[in-house]
Length: 312
Image (cartoon, rainbow, N blue to C red; front, side, top):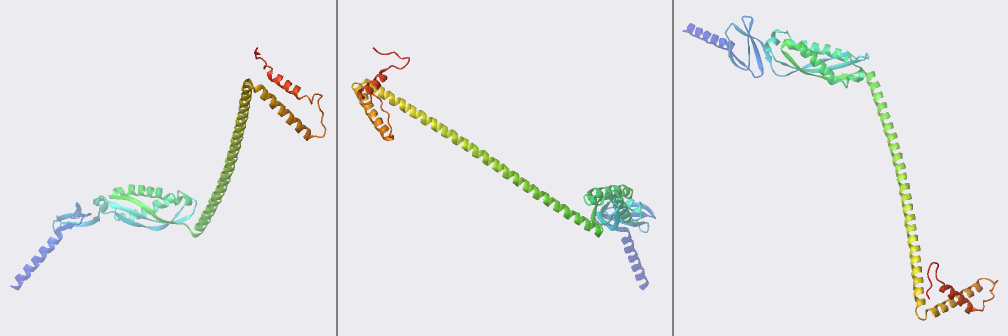
């Protein structure tokens, strides 16, 4: 009875062991490489699979996810013979598990070493001042070289990123001094340009002020001239109107007598003013003959104007 129980227990354990060896569950985004009697047999994708006991063996397990590989810091020499320390990160993905299993023994180590050598080669092609601005181009060149080498291994290099570029301390100090001098130079240039623009704006403002003042003076003179002309015209028109009124008045009954009276008054008034203006006075022979003076003025008024015809 005891011996039979032990045999049953042994058989149960053997069955469980065989099931554990033959039933395989592959996780998502994973691939298992199966060998049958030491030779490649199949690649198992995600899911449940049954193997032949004691014949099929899972030899390699690969993750199909994108993997980041840290590239250790290394010393590179630039084209102008300056040593810089550079490190980076490499991103890759397994596309063909069979190639990744049998194409190379350790693709992580191989790509890491190849990335370092390629990076040293690319850094050696450019000067120190350009290493910082050429990081994108360096990354692209490293990816291209690694992608060519990793294709037979079933691995795809997606991208490479430089993390740090560290020059020596003396070079960093020189670069800092150069940067400070460049900033001071730019500050002086901006200051001088600002002063120049301010002087130009001030001169332009003064020019516009002079132009506006001259235009205002010109307009003032034009307005004054127009005003004087208008005044002269108005005086002339008023004088002409006055003379016309006088001429019309002379023609009415009693006009001649009124004119004679007015002439006599003006004569006496002006003669009196002349006597007050100076102590020396030259008198004409007929000064006492006011009537002859009035007759002379009236005869002059009766004379027709040149070119006109006298009335009978």
